[in-house]
Image (cartoon, rainbow, N blue to C red; front, top):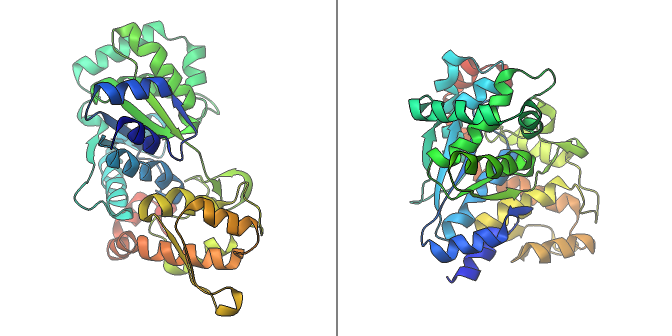
Length: 339
């Protein structure tokens, strides 16, 4: 795979790259660059989180080394429910969800727990140095779409400073995240050089809609908006069946988004089973072909939903089966974690 092919694979299904020129330069100069994605170990892991995490497969196929930060300290700084004494439980829960939600094969990512290095002297010293050159206004803006920020705590203003330093201390070349991370990504590129560290490439994936329809996004704190990666088969089918998916409408269509960002990157095709009188079984080899069939009203929302639900039932079986046997883990974390 040449540089341009690797570039296009990394760019696929992204919303923005800061900058594309920097990414091309990186791929030309470094044979095996590295990328990380951070996941704060706060609430339940749901399908919205899998969009960005699933993007890691494109990076791996492009020859990029992958790391996943289990951001326990970040979680405690942002979420009052993430008690310091419970952080290890949340880390192991999050790690298990990510491991079981995908078929990683022999290419499992490297997991790094934030507190394993974020409490070290050098990191803390750099955090204090960066705090002396960061204004409250800039830190607030950077954190505005990621932390709660209703009545900002000092801890929430530390959040973007730490996320910038994570790029350096994880020794990566690229950071991956949803487009709600954009203010922090720009902050990273502005402030790391002021401590003598290099800028990294920032890659953003779009945020998917929620089960509640247009203008909403999946949120761990709003159970009716999301599907947990270990939801029961009954709940999963019920939630997909109720999802916003008007016939022929692409905008804010969660069902189409799930197929585009999860199914095709993982499997490269999408299979729909339906009676012969409704067109018979179909196998779509590209998302573009499937979307055209949907917009042309040759693929009915009911058939699309059924096919996606069955795909997810099978794909998420390992996570579902694990937590059915370890329900006590979820009960210890709190009622919001229960399926």
